[in-house]
Length: 109
View 1 (cartoon, one colour):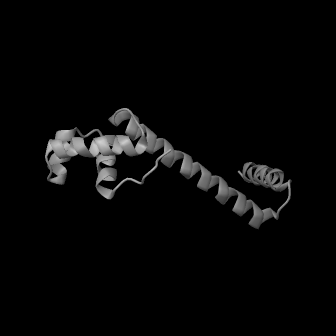
View 2: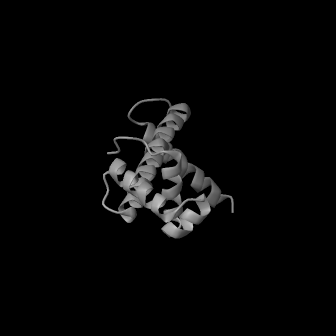
View 3: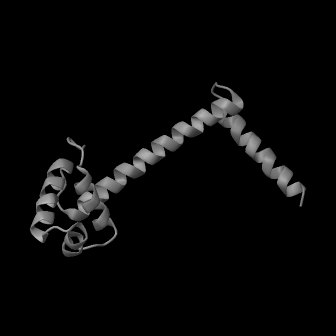
């Protein structure tokens, strides 16, 4: 778990690494030295408690993926509540409505 949030510049370095840029290419893009980029990597690894740059990138992408899934699940539940009301059967009702919709579509062709 991340103890401290990444600084904007640290986040840029993660993003550049995720696209395949080397430390030298990242340094050129940011107008910094390779040594400065390596110092950023040390800080990133310390904050994320990761072992190397690949682990750091994978950790951030995994966190973002999990957060997006959590948000989507919450949105699905909110929409089911709006469409079908609450209760245990909201998911079953949504599946039934989807099935009926696909039957109508298949029957109209």
